[in-house]
Structures are given as structure tokens and as C-alpha cells.
Amino acid sequence: MHYDVRMATAARFLSAATRPFQHFGQIRDFATTAGVEFVVLACTLLSLRLAAVYWGPTGFGEYVIFRRDIGLLQLPLSLSVALGITRYVAIARTTGKSERAYAIAAALACLTTLVMALVVTLLAPAMMADLLFGSPSYVTLLRSLLLAVAGLVMHSVAYGVFRGRLDMRSANALQFANIAIVPLIVLSIPHRTVAQVGAAIGGAWLLVALTSLALGQRRATGSVTRSEVVGALRELLGYGLPRVPGEFALSALFAVPVTMMAHRVGVAEAGYLGFGISLVTMIASVFTPLGLIMLPSTSALIARNDVSDLRQNAFRITAICVCGAAVAVAAIVALAPFIVARGLGSAFVAAVPLVRLVVLAAIPYVSYIVLRNVLDAAHARPFNAKNLLIGLSVVWGAGLVDGRPAVMPLAVLAGTTVIGALTALDSWRILGRLQDITRA
Image 1: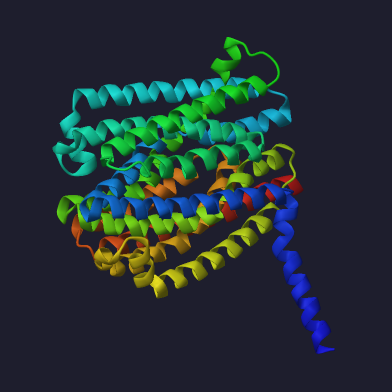
Image 2: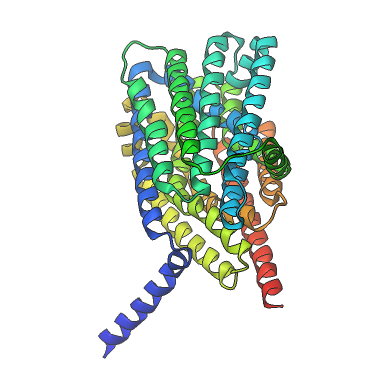
């Protein structure tokens, strides 16, 4: 009797836990996307290991800062159109608009901002190198950085188009080739400097992304007019520009602490913090596939006024993800000496305390990673931008007051906690309002 009760209780819990996935109807896409993100995670760890072996603590620090700066520049330079294109392509497929117009408009907008960034860098290379890497001597590394940023921006556009179509097979193939395989292939070539590796990775990213975008548009049906492209550009910029401060804040959230430590303590110590932050983003990447599918799916559901259980399903998904992140964090905290020694080498043992502190930020960050997509789908207003700017101000303020290695990981934890809590509050309120309007 007790056995039957326990089995019935387990069955009810399993049904409740999986109901959100059934609601969004994307079980297969989630499974394949999660698999690709896991491969990306493994390849990222391997690339960090190769960088540590090839270049030692100083070169490893340069490579980690290089990766952080890519994120710092990529999100604002994309003008958030890579995010908007996923939303508007999904809506276009529901309403009959031209999805090709949005892809062309997004590519044009991003190419314009990339050219502007190149001009600014050519005018003041030493100043930009000092700002991003902590020394004007890194001008060569700055040139490689611009190429890598261009490649990742166009990758995000092509990936966003595939996501909007819910063509996760093509999206996953692009993610696997560009983000997982390309860095490993480049890093496997011996006797290369960090600048040479960065330039090669960026060039490959750009080539693969532009090829994927061109091939994807050849498969799209129907012609597109100039007026449609202009209209799509206005929609994308109207949606994306208010989110640019938030995109900058998101990239700066993890890049600023590393850069501050590079200025105040040194490149090697900044690399330790960067490695810990990489573990945070890697944990979050395990749950990113949910968000990748939730944005276009939620956008389509809202366009059809099918929001009766949206809030309950979104928060049930979030609770499951946060619990999973907590388990991963506990494992990393317990095994930090082993992970650092195996992942980087015995020379990096000093990174263990920083890793244990900063990895705690993964728990609130995962909450944001899941729910941000619901907010972006539910409302055109940039709620995420507001929350990210508040969280960044917490991190930046702590760094300005005290930039010691023991303080910056705690600042990252405080900033991500604020962001996760505010995102949850906004999501609960806005989704509840949508459900009330539908019932009325």
C-alpha cells in the first residue's frame, strides 16, 4: 500500500515537472540542443586547458581576458537585433510576414555597427588596448579581438534566424561547428601567439556564420521588397536599441571584474577570476537550451493568446533549473582543487579560493538565464536591461571601493543575485497580467 502511494506521488511529481516541456512541445529540440551545449561546454574546458598548457599563467590570463572582451563588445555591437530577430521571425511565421526581410535588416544593422567600431579603434588603438587589456602594448591583440567580435556578432544573427524558425537542427549545427569545434582546431596548431589564435578563430567564425546565413536565406520562400526591409529594420531597432544598455551590462557583468583585477593586481590573477567566471557561464550553458526554445515558443503562444498556464509553466521550469545549478555548484566547490589541477595544471592552485567563491553566482544567474527569454517574449519594454544595469552597478561599485581578489568574486555573486531576483519578480508580475487580460 505504501509502495503504491509512493509510486503515485512520484508519478504526479514527474507529470508536473515535465508539463512545461509538453506545453512547449519541443522535447526533441530541447534534447538535441542540450546535447550540443554540453559538447560546447566540454570543448570550452578543453580549449582553456590547451591555453594553460601552451602559454602558462600569463598567456592564459591574456587568452581569458580576450574571451571576456569578446563578450563585452559582441552584445552591444549587435544592437540586440540578434535577440529581436528570433522574436520577430517567430511572429512572422505565425502572422504571414516576410522573415527574410528581418534577416537582411539584422545583417545590415550589425555590419554598420562593426564598421563604426573598427573606425573608433583605428583612431585610438592604444587607448582601447589599455581600456580592454590593461596595457597599451596589447594593440596587436586588439586587432584580433575586433575580428573575433565581428565573427561572433554575425554568428548570433544567423543563429537567431534559425531559432526564430524553430529550426534547431540548423541552429545546433552552426553552434557545434563555430563555438565548439573552431576554437579547438585553431588551438591545436602549435607555436601560435594569443593574437594569432584570436584572429584565426574570429576569421573562421565570420566565414562560417556568413555562409550559414546566406544558405539559410536561399531556403527561404518569397521575395522581399526594400520597404519590407526598412520596416523590419525599424521594428528590430525599436525592439533592440532600448536593450543595448542591458546587453552591454550583461557582457560587462563578467568582463568588468576581470579587467579591474588586471589593472589592480595583474593579468595572471585576473585569469584565475576569469576561469571561475567561465565555470559560472558553463553551468548556465547547460540550461541555456531551455531559453533558446522558450523565446520563440513563448512569442508564438502570446501571438495566439494561448497564455493560460504560461506563468506556472515558466516558474516550474525555472525551479527545476535552479535546483540543477545548485547541485552542480556544490560539486564544483567540493572538487575545486581537483578541477583546477586537472583543468589548468598544478601551477594554477592559487585559483582555487577564487573559483569556490565566484562559482556560487551560477545559482541566481541560471534563474535569470531561463526567465529573461520569457520577459523578452512577453513585452517589448527592456525589463532585462533595467535589471542588468542595476546588477552591474552593484559589481562596479564594489570593485571601485575594493578591488582585492577576495572581494571581486563576492561582488559578482551579489550582482547576479540582484539580477536573478529582479527578473523573477518582473516575470511573475507581467505573466500574471497577461493571464488576467486573457481571462477578461
